[in-house]
Image (tube, rainbow, N blue to C red; front, side, top):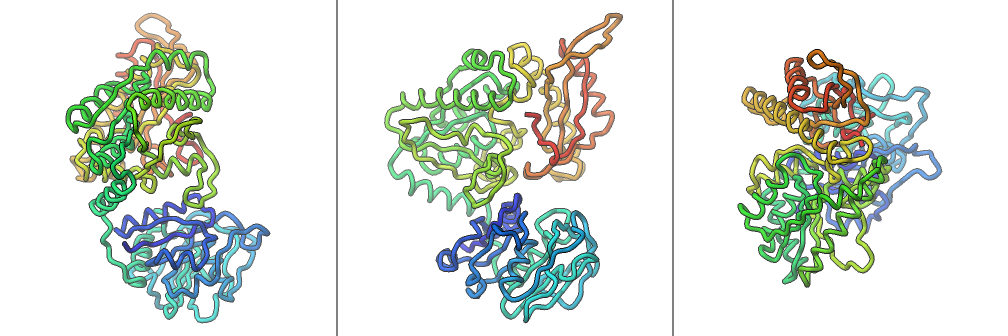
Length: 523
């Protein structure tokens, strides 16, 4: 399979480059930048992309690459820091600038360019740098500039080496996908033949080879990722997969019943259901710190899960629905990145002592929207595939402060109203535009219960009850998100229903913070 490898120089969004390449139906993976030329050549890359990075090329510990890679004859595209590494390695110059260039910039094209073919002569691109290439290496043409950057793009068609100081992988670069498309198809001569159908074929073969005649177990959480993972592994090994669903009582309204209905009945996958609701309430009593909640929920999840696994006898493999945002936010370095830990994830906690399962993570290079596409290809119900993203610790981290059965009932009831109203809002947009992810559609929406009370008036009486926070965002991959500009009448309807239908709640507020600087979840 033709593969484009992204050399990661520590960029937070290195995987986003690979994702944009996959959007163009070419398979891509991220690998560490310190790979040797011989090791890279053994991978038989169809093309190489050098990512951005936070360091200065002049820093003492600045990440670098084997310069022999430029001699392999493979098409290479350097982006931002990657352009600077390319320029220095090939005899160009990189200079410190007095003023950094961050955010949107006005790019002006110069001479004829293969990479910029089909893009406007003047266009908006996204910059994020202080150092910049001041002199291109010999044999390179400067094909674009900005006010602050004399070499905003450069190329050497004879050697098939191309580079930009800006970030085409970011949506804010208006012609970004055209630029990547030019590199993949006009420069590298690749074919757009990577699809979810081919991904399934490859992963099924890989899982079968890994598992052999063994047995596997999969933890179902009620969310999209674990559901798609289970369906994919079941496609590969059939009845030799057993799913375990731990009902911890922290799910949204109707979800526990939905898991049993889909996997036990519709798919016929062997399913073990464990009622652990009381166990989790006792475990979380009095715990307010969000990371402590996550640790306790994750630890108890595995404890319950492995108790059930032991009852199944000889099972060698554990399948998990880990996806790439989980890895980035947990600071893991499976792809060579150096992202800081943002939060811990229940499905990335190490096995306890004595456990010898081999891990299968077939989704660990996919973003959420790709997982949904995969679910549809596998034949999962649309309602399940397009359900709201949901954190592993469930409603426990949508309750700020200690978790109680009363608070769970409040946030579950409010959340059901939010989802019902915004499901309908999205459906109206879909009917109007024909696009599931239209410009104003909500990608994720839910209720958060803060650990405070506020004064209100209901009828002729003064109340002192809890407020609820509405969170609704637009996003494609959970890496970045913007708050949804919901119509006022939709917000008013949600507020009326929550206050009128959920005793104990007397106020609704709306979170209008984007990610970054906030996260989508509150905890």
